[in-house]
Image (tube, rainbow, N blue to C red; front, side, top):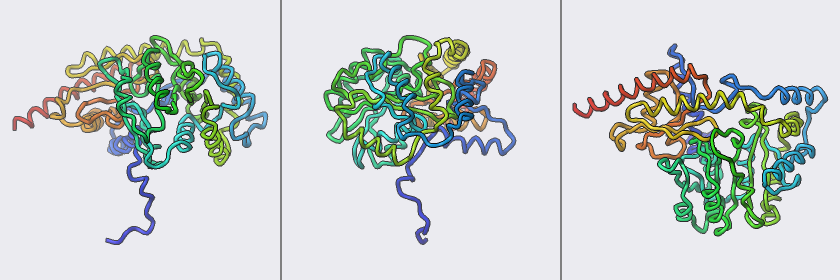
Amino acid sequence: MSKPFYEPAARTKNYKYAIRNIVVEAQKIEAQGKKVTYLNIGDPSLYGFQPPEELIEANIKAIRDGYCGYSPSAGILEARIAVADDANRRGIQTTPDDVLFTYGASEAADLVLTALLDAGDEVLVPAPGYPLYTAIATKLGAVEIKYSQNADNNWQPDADELRSKISPRTKALVIINPNNPTGAVYSKETLEAMLNVAREYKLVVIADEVYHKLLFDGKHVPMGSLAGTDLPVITMESLSKNYLAPGWRLGWMTMTNSAVMPDLKAAIRKLADARLCAPMSPQHVIKTAISLPTSYLDAPMKRLREQRDITFESINKIKGMRCNKPEGAFYAMAQVDLENGDLGTDEEFVLGLLREKGVLFVHGSGFGTAPKDGFFRIVFLPNAETLRDVYTRLAEFAAEFREVKSTAEVK
């Protein structure tokens, strides 16, 4: 068979993003006339959450005032000043010149890793962790090195294990806190231990903190606040989750201790120049967003807390399942006992649930866990009534799945 003339680049063959890839299977089910309940993607707007009214009005005003063109590549000065002031109030040392607006926090991650990693270089990412970092590393020909989060210790990483993963090619450490997909919030002690490893091996720390306002328990400690004067930390935030406006596609990065990474900062700015700019009108929302009283989240967090509690209690009542209690964000990482793989894989379980019960989760191996471990991510954004129905269907399927597999083994 001849080679296709219009063949895509080899780098795309292993480029995967499980959160959206699995939707293809759901669409096949819907094409058969069956309703699917989607709990695979963290989009608050799909489940009735909306940005604060003040931000909606500010965005409309910006458009009406004519802010519909290109902005400076790094973003408008007023917004960069507002972000820098807010960061410094939270202990993250930065300046307006070290703030750069992006097309969502996803583009911020892409710009940083593209500027930093050559083919064969290594980046440390959490497992389970957000698959965006896996996809970017694959695209760049870099090597993703997974470090563990321990489910038995409320998903806290271990600094000694992290240290054991480092090689001469390791360039960066990604820390997602609050964590997607586990909902964990790392303790100050955990963060300090991890940052000490980064300092020891001169790694750039990528601090993904896009959920830092969405907390149920404990306190969020910004990684940039622990950087001292020598550790380069690049913090990523966005309007998407903390302000419930994912479709506005505005994110930003703040650099702490940029003086120790001047060449990297210049490379990031060069890449940012080439892609022109982030969306213009939402940048005029930033000053308003950052000045909002914390009460803007009272109603959303009250609802999310109820949904978090329903999720935690329901999963732990199902035979053969367990789930940690999320401390932040709106995800839970549940686990079904697959008897060390004898009952199949996490993806088989998730696809079976989809086909039999019309419920869509994402399998844990899409976030870097072992398929035999049986993890799957739940997005608990739907309302309480929907969640209770989903967990009833999940319990029914889990019992049926175990019975079918056990019967097959007997035969």
